[in-house]
Length: 148
Length: 148
Image 1 (cartoon, helix red, strand yellow):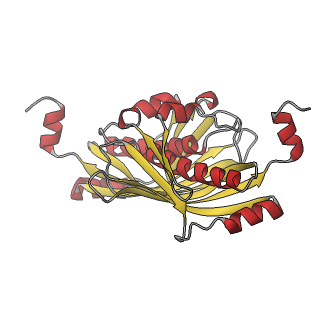
Image 2 (cartoon, helix red, strand yellow):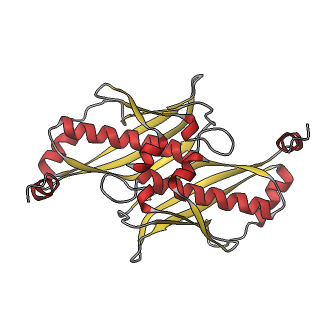
């Protein structure tokens, strides 16, 4: 994905519940020398998207994942590298309902929280987003694998 | 701004009320061949940011402009170049209150709507965002101009 490559995004940590992504400030800096708002929102959106994708895979399902809507609050400028962490809203980290819906109905949604921390503590910005996952149909998978 | 350069953003149109930005799909494409959600959100955020900055300039004021919060709804995938238009919420296009507050108090906020259209009509996504403008202090301006 060209925009993600341009941002210099890498996976920093994944423990099955929280996915943390990193992007260097110099690739994502604005005219004021701090992190560009669009990059902050992109990295949080991407962390959530990645987590939903990983959870679908963990359930043994191949799914397309889309962000459906999001609310972002920007609290303080960030003059350091961007580190975004995403996890399930509600604090349970229980993805079994999501996996069951995706398996049974071919479609599931999840609400995720993500934030980007300031180096000295506190939060640079915060995001709540809804993601939708739809299992790939068998003929789509065959097409992708060249089994037509 | 490196992330904006990487996205290939250019100004397509500005008529004093609506700012339209363009970004090519190939620089902003995702794994599904359509526009990356982060790029869609970034371009809408940037269109609003640019419009607020232009309105402050039109009022004869030098201001730092920040996005404070935003809500994005993604409605349909976009398989074409990204074209984002931003304008003042409410349909009046009357920026006189914003300019007066910025001049008198050194600080003003504005609520903007932005969207990205689908080539055949309809909307790919929609954004409502609040921006805050703060006039630059005279010593900041002197620093920038090397007049220290």
